Amino acid sequence: MRIYWVDDMAIVEGRWTGPIWDTHLHLDISGRGIAAAHDFANAGGTHLCLVHKPGFPYKLPESLDAVKQAYIGTLDMADAVRREVGIDVRVILGPHPVVWEKQIHTLGMEDATQLHIDSVSLALEHCAEGEAVALGEVGRPHYPVSGDIWDASNEQLETVMHMASQAGVPIQLHVEDHGAQTNMELAAICDRSGLERSRAVHHYAPSDVSAAFTHGLSSSVSMGKDSLARLLETHRDCSSTWTMETDYLDDPSRPGAVLGPKTVPKRTHALVSLLLEIENPEQVAELMNHVQYVWPSALYGEFDP
Image (tube, rainbow, N blue to C red; front, side, top):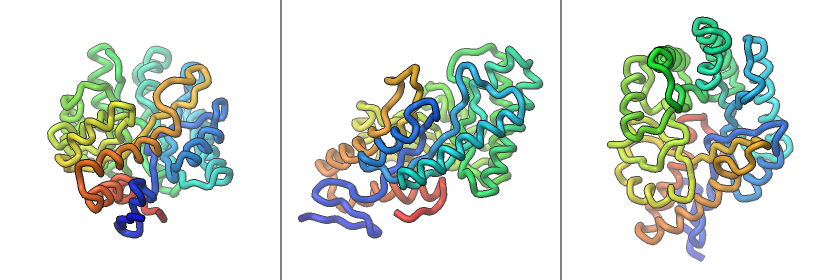
């Protein structure tokens, strides 16, 4: 049996035996919930970031009290997964930028923006209390909006990044997909706000993790079928953190939307197999140690692998 160790984690007979993180996943009490978490664990998953899910399209909170109750629901789901599935769950709380954009048209720009900022403050309080580890998903609309709304979203994002920086909390970003241009713009907002680029995680990120593409942002890579080839091409040129995610929605009305909860464990083993064809096992073990342990620890807190 061939075993290649790195910091008590190993590749055994071509398979990674260390921790496996999905760093962006949603669970819904009205969806599969705990059953989806069991799917992740049974496929080999050990740690996940449970990201707060807004109540699209009918339950958008219109007061801070409603936001409080929604956050409690996410925290309760995390506790249930820990208790019933036995895996490590890190909670990420925050107001979704699409909620803000939708509520501009119902509450008005001023009230929608104030609710958004108050919701950020509340999420940061949960982080300070150790109940959550990051702010998210925050950002800007991923679809075309008016110039006024676009400008307001960038001003607001700079404020949110500054708040996260002051609190010492990383953020996960929901943004449009305009390739390297998006990352370059986000990096500039980070710099103006005082937030380290590495503490800003581009969620649902493309699998190009080269420095020229990421501009120093961290990437939570969407692990679709086509992701592996680009990771193989670009991982050597990476200068910042990257991890793996599904963005599993757990939406009963959209059962096939995004990726399923078994995806990251499957893609992890597939990536290891492909890497072993072009690199020596010690290099592969070192990379996986970073993707599945060192980098998640740096962003979301130390854990027992």
